[in-house]
Length: 222
Ligand code: SF4
Image 1 (tube, rainbow, N blue to C red):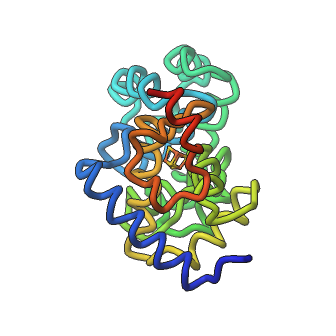
Image 2: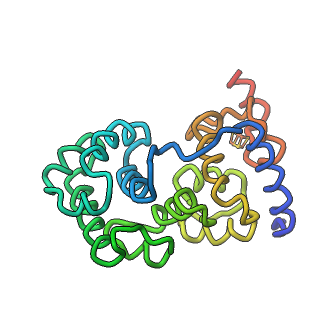
């Protein structure tokens, strides 16, 4: 039988409470000192780990801390600085174009507006929501690979498309938890509900998760 929206909301509320207990220090793991630096770090995190991004951004932002400075940077130098994050030529071109657009259209500031953000070169909906939520504390629900996978395991959605999942989760999760929800799920995806080997035997969400492994499989995990 299809679970009602009300039921999902109640179940999700309990899941979120538990996640807050398990990960009280959960936060965005990309280091940044301004919305601009968060925007660039998030762009760099495509197809790359946050840890790897955090290794390259100190030097990158030492040279180019603001949109104004990055707008006049040689693209080759940007590429060299972000080489280890992969797809570096594309990322460098996008960073340069994005910084130039910010300078020309927004006086070098990052706009705190979803529609404006997604029009910036190299900025997709996910990056825009990260910047809104973490950079400006405006509720934004970021749907990354962890959220897609775990929201499906929790049977909060059966969609695979990030935008459709975002719309569904917005109805299920209280707005005040939108930003933290993603951070909490990412922490849980890294620590317990690991892709292809979820540690159901030590998962505190098991009681609320329809995908918890059956007992025989859990015994194998032990
Ligand atoms: S019970 Fe298993 S599948 Fe469900 S969230 Fe926990 S680790 Fe993931």
